[in-house]
Structures are given as C-alpha cells and as structure tokens.
Length: 226
Image (cartoon, rainbow, N blue to C red; front, side, top):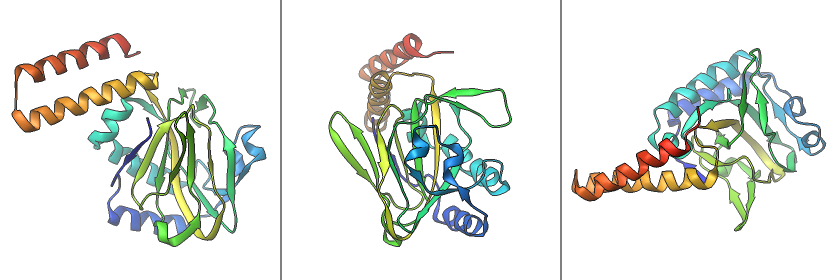
C-alpha cells in the first residue's frame, strides 16, 4: 500500500523546521547508505546525532503519534528516529531497496523495516525534479507532495529520487516496524478500520458496525506480532 498522509506537520512547524535545517551543517548522504546503495546515492544529510535532527525528529514522532491515518495504516510498533536529507545541483538517488534491518544509533535496538516514509519540507514549486519514484506490480508511482505532507510505502519496493535540477529538496526519511509485517494483511486491516470509522460516523453504533469491528479485532489477534 502506497498512501499519502496529508498535513503531518502544520505550516508553522514546517517553517520552523526550514529555519533549523537551513542553519545546520550537512554531510555526505552516503554515511547511512548500504554498500550497494552507496554506489547510487548522491545527496546531503544531517548527521544522525545532530541536535537539529534530534529536535525535529521528536516533533515528527509526536505528530505521527497523534495522526489517526498514520496509526491506522502503519500499525506502528517501532519508528526509526527520523533522518533528514537535501538534494540540489543535480543530486539524485538511483534505484535501490531499503535495508531490511536498521540499527538504531547509540542503542542495542534494531528494527525491521516494513514501511518507508518520506516527509516533505520543500514546496513542489521550489524545485524541479526530485520526484520519489516507487515501483510496484502496478508500475511506477511519481511522488512530489506539498510541504508537511508524507508518503508511506512498503520498504520492499524498489524506488529512486530523480535529479534535482533547480532549487533544493528538503525532506525527512525514516522506517517503521509494523505490528503486522505483511503488507497485504496491513492493507486489509486498514480497509476494515476505514470502513468501521465511516459506518460509525454515518450511522452510529449498529449490528453491521459490530460485525466489521469483530472481524477487525479478530484479524488483529491473528496477525499482530509481539
């Protein structure tokens, strides 16, 4: 499932983040790339332990925890601390797949990357190129969202970022380990959860709502991992 999550951050939060990111010192983005990805990655990145990265990461994680659409779609168990990158001057990231396991810096914890996320800080009219292209069985999906919006997609997908030929593309990227690792099962649960919310909003509590809620809860019991 490839899903846009609108307005994860407010315009005020985006503006504040832009000021912090513009004042930060950036390093070569290949520092967090795997061996194969490093061959195709050309961008700049905030160091993982940079105070700005930690501050903005906390803002993002707090916003995600309060976002019902994200919680319903991702069913998050763990979220990797958000990272931040910048593309400009023709920089790009060639086709790759994200590492299956990520080590959380300065901890002994690892997460399985079930879902990948990109949160945009630059407006689409501020740069040319820089589209995130996600590949799946239905073809190529071109993603370039408004500032403050986020795209969520399976980490199993091949994807790339096209060259930024004008302006600068600022974004945050990170990974989620879901309570339900299978994308098909997560999609089914998301559809059921969406249906029960809409039923309740339209009709209130009903026998049909109870059946949908029962199916949702019992499938969660079957598929959720500790």
